[in-house]
Length: 264
Image 1 (cartoon, rainbow, N blue to C red):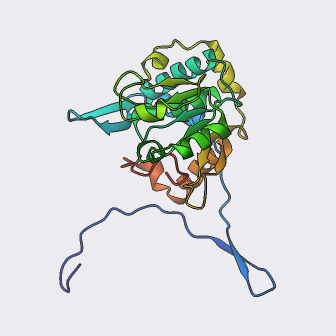
Image 2 (cartoon, rainbow, N blue to C red):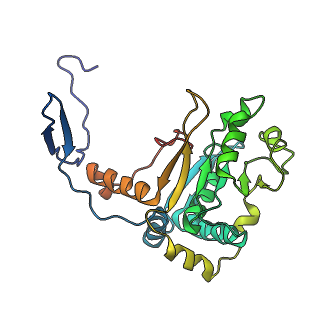
Image 3 (cartoon, rainbow, N blue to C red):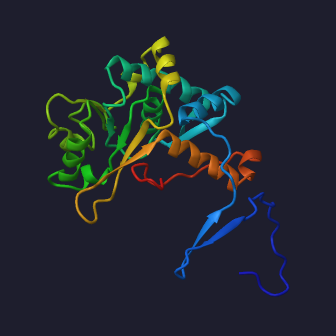
């Protein structure tokens, strides 16, 4: 708290959007508030944004996470683009498309992000599931409910080696037969991308499904919510317009919000 007579610390000015609000009266005593700011043009999907940043600033750190032994694991925009294209090729090699979502049981991590971005590049919907449904449940009922809805052919559960090891071993042991499970992205990242990736990337449309996100299940079993590529990319454009300072000073984000939830 600033006491009387004390000097306030200097803060850098932030370039913020000027509030422009329209009011519409409903005629029954209510009203609707609407932003008068027109949404600017934006990418068709987030894969395009990743490609653009990889071309503009390939060496700039995009993702970083603490490692158990100390220090940081860092991935640049260029590295992320290359990894996403390799993962996308691996997904295409498995015959995956809009009708065959992939499921991610893991919490936030660089590997989670790279698989998600690979799905975006390949036009394959991604379904992140709350790690709590796997790690804090005895019967894994919510996991099996979600699997029954999305019917994935590939599940990623980040672990410490083989599917029988690591924190997700118990839930993986209960999965139905016929679903490929991975605990490491090594094989996917080692795949060499071909022209098939470029063709699928060019074919992606804004209304294609990018993610299936599931509600918390606090009032019953989790319910799936469709997130299209248009929703995600237009949201990025909206953020850029209300916070113009991001255009001059790229942010360093401390990310804790879970990626299995819309707000994350």
